[in-house]
Image (cartoon, rainbow, N blue to C red; front, side, top):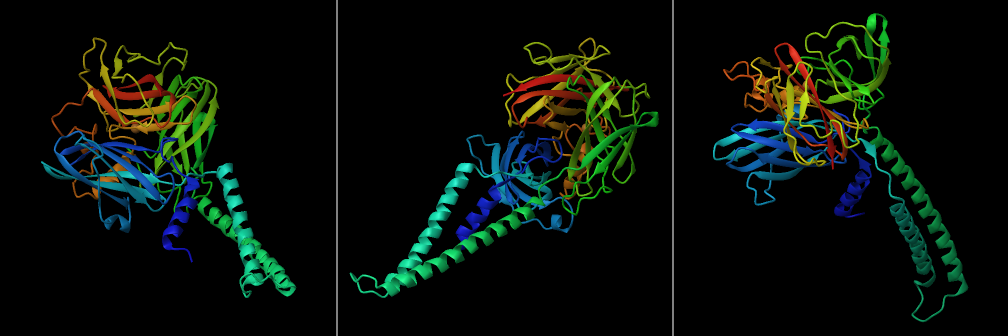
Length: 496
Ligand SMILES: [Cu+2]
């Protein structure tokens, strides 16, 4: 028997061969979020583990001074288990910075999780819960050098064992210095042959066990919902979901509204990324959505559809569709459209612009940092001003929030729909806060949310906590509303 410690190491090693990331959003697995733990405003980064079970890395910066300590607890977002949190872990301060905390937590199973942060400090205690969807997302191939080394070690082990058995059969009963008689030699050959056959059988059975275990793990690897798009008569876009088979718990009829809509659909003309629509198809059946298309310029559009399951697990479905010029309906309600120059990375163009000229003379201004680095948490801050450079007097909330943003990599590998509270789906965020006992379960209690209840005017500046997942070129679509106009500005970013 192996001691339990080495067993644990071997188990860890087996799991290390399998990698995670991504779920909601596309190619952007890390969670960036901003929220209030009582009196303290926290900027939270959660990097989900590369494997399940695995360790999530967590960073918190308090923007309010006076926090002495923060504890973290992982729990499921919904269901009975969410009511019985395990013992909390204390975060540590890795640097002299007294308001920066780090920690890590084991995430034991695939699913819709949350991390509960409890902050203690000079202003008392506050609680903030941040949802984390955790999925295993693939299997990492063993490096061939590692495979060769393990194979060589395995062969040495088998031959060594055969040698030991042979020596034992031949020499065990001899006095020191005495040479083995022929009967002993024969017995040794028989014993070695038997040992070899048994060991080879063991290796073959072990391989079968390994494959069965790998197949079992593969069934947990996240397989995103798929979507087929067709345009039907009268310019009706039909989106049909297809479940490629994943965990049994996934359903196609349990979607919950996320900031007013069951589905948020971004249609981006590709590859120029010069036309974008933010639309809201209606659910007409199980896994079936319809949308009467607005007028659209001809072209191929990448479609990114965000939905949230009843347990708070978000998914982004991706497909594309090619349409001729469509003379469709006018944009109404929460629908919005934006146009920009096509992406062009030749040292000119929009890639370093800090101000975007909107069609009605308004401007969106980005407080652009000098450099942008992948995996670095950042507040992306945008301000809307009128033609005179003044704050608009008729600022409105757009779907309950000061702004919405989509970060899209120009090679199509990253799509993230972000809000002032961060990358987390609003529906999941509200589920998490409703269990805190803090009462902050309404959108109006979250950053950049509905403030219509208070006398405070709607600000003309919005910030989105986010970090680019990888280096490369990105286009950012930012939307804010004034009067009845939804303004869609476009910025480009080169990320190191
Ligand atoms: Cu949004």
